[in-house]
Amino acid sequence: MRVGIVILPEHRWWAAEPRWRAADEYGFDHAWTYDHLGWRTLVDGPWFDSVPTLTAAAMVTSSIRLGTFVTTPNFRHPVPLARSVLALDDISDGRFLLGVGSGSSGPANYDGKVFGGADITPGQVAERFEEFVALTDKLLRQPRTTHSGRWFEAAEARSAPGCVQRPRVPFLVAANGPKAMGTAARHGQGWVTTGKPDAEDLEQWWRGVTELAERFDDVLDQHGRDRATVDRYISVDASPVFSLSSVGAFEEHAGRAAAAGFTDLVVHWPRPDTPYAGRETTLEHVAADLLPGLGGRAAGPAGRGEQERGGPTVTDWSQQGRSAQG
Image 1 (cartoon, one colour):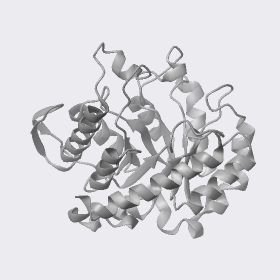
Image 2 (cartoon, helix red, strand yellow):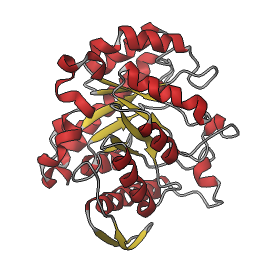
Image 3 (cartoon, helix red, strand yellow):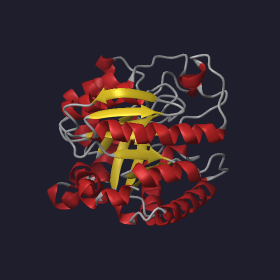
């Protein structure tokens, strides 16, 4: 199983750079940052844009894959987004992963609220998300794209020179509901889940994760998609127990994720206070003592095998044929 880590874009670069370098040196398989204009309880604190952050991270790392966790249509338009993705994939030499999500609605949605627009319904969120992902897919595959939809327009949008990764960068689609899962089945090389919200304890949360994984299997079957062609990412810090609150907490999450069939585990860099409160010494112990035994990049060449640079689904998915993509 591969392990990734999220580094929130809240630090000035002189403080953020050592974290990105360390994530690479520790042997994490992928490193992520949030793509928001502001986020929840941290909305009044320091916050930086994901694209220049990941560009800078690409310049100070060499092996770890990098990505957004996750990009949404709350404030991103597919046309300029595609240009940013092309640049990130080029600068990182094919290490970029595009994590996408539908974006929330309601009072917690700062990304949408800051523009002063009205809330949209859950059905509209799902409809907009499908159009967002489908158009971004086309923009990254085709030399020119024209599109006229309910939510987005594109007129002869160019995309030269194309992605380093072919036919485009891999999409990791965050999805808990059935409509978003359909989007993941049609367009994703990876599926991301945060589990069901409001779990009272860890047992309940993992039961919900198992139910979601079974539901996603059914959606893949309905779309005629081979289950083996989609990697499965679990963001375990959405659970009631922070993964790096202790070495034991990480070990338990990793064991449960592997048993549930997840290919990738995603944790967060510890912060001094909530959310994700923990100690960096715990992160160091996990990196030194546990990562090498999980079979990802930290295991070295013998343990990596096909998992190099994110796994066979990332590097070989273009050989699976468009029929698998819906």
